Image (tube, one colour):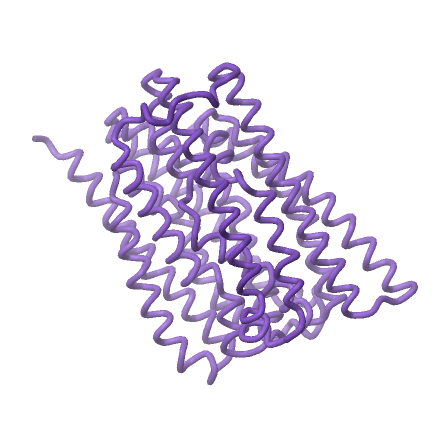
Length: 436
């Protein structure tokens, strides 16, 4: 728990500083572009990340699950071979994802953005996928080597660059004026630069750490020496399916709003989601720190320590999430007004989203626990069942009741899927703790 708190505190401080810059650039971009333009940029960014996620095998989870186990046992050559295989697989996925974005840019502009002639925006932002060719593997490496705080520093650096560019665009527009299309291009380029800095920075940091830990030349490890290739592939495939389900049902919200409604509704929903999404600022460092620790305790079969550990992190998460939620309830309208008075109409949707996100970020360890137990298939099933219910209801409800309905459905999805996964994880822990 001490290691988790130290790493999380360092990441939180970096993320909090980056958060201030992120909110600032979001406010300036929202004011410059208005709801329709801001929603359009959000849809373009969401589309690229969704296409990448559809193909991604979440190699960071594979590195933590098996690389952490190999390191715990002192099997450095196996660790090197695993990371090499993971890096090559992720590079292949990034190339395929960019190709997919480029090929499908036309339909994406027509159906999601409902703005023909902007295919170039999808292709331009899609190049960021090439810069993030090893981001998942690199993050996994930093997790198992207890250097995850480095990710916070890199994230802060990219936030500085993006915020500085968007701030400069805003000042120039206020003084001299900029055409709407030019403003869209410049804002998108600023976000793309930040994505490139993050991806390349993570790659450099992880490579340096591997040289220190495994020695120079670790990348020459023979991948064919890895044991249980079938088990590794099954884990990676399950992670891919889970990632796909999560993207389709949870992380592609702007695409669904754009498909069912329009870019203006997407812009309003994006601002509401952005504000409530601040719950992730303290949660993300905990997630990155808790997974390798939980996996280590499972490898050691320290069941009582694992239960105490989960109880402690849940209590901590519940306390700070409750405080933040009360803050949103009191100051939510004011926070929306900071983006522009036209965004305050999204307050009801913001409150609807708050319920599900508080539940999710309080029990944030739900899926990592099942991964550590090797029960990723159950997690996938829970995500798919809850997601299908959400999607079936969204088809008639969102076009009729607007993005408010999407917010309610997303909250219900979180409660159902996370609740099922937590129930299964706790039951498995109790089973392993029971005397034989």
